Image (cartoon, rainbow, N blue to C red; front, side):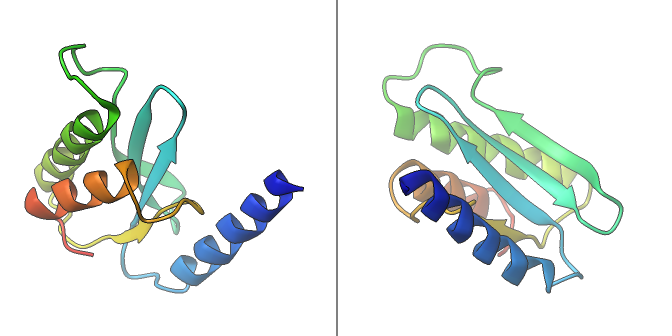
Length: 113
């Protein structure tokens, strides 16, 4: 039952963001160990930039600081490809904890959403 609610919430968020077609989406994927982010162009169905905690060196102490590093990395990768405006797709997760840390780090890195 809980999984079905999450799928419905994810679809609801995704549908609202697809209506904004002038910006690519910054999609966040969270698991128990890792967090990753992708910038996706829905019109062309391609991934423009990506960053994940799997590629980071294991020197961070907690998951929130790792999410902050991933946020900085996705912002850097996006700015290299001249992407400055994105819409934030939290994939049904609450805007709290690691998701919030990633979003704030991406904003500090130069992305606007």
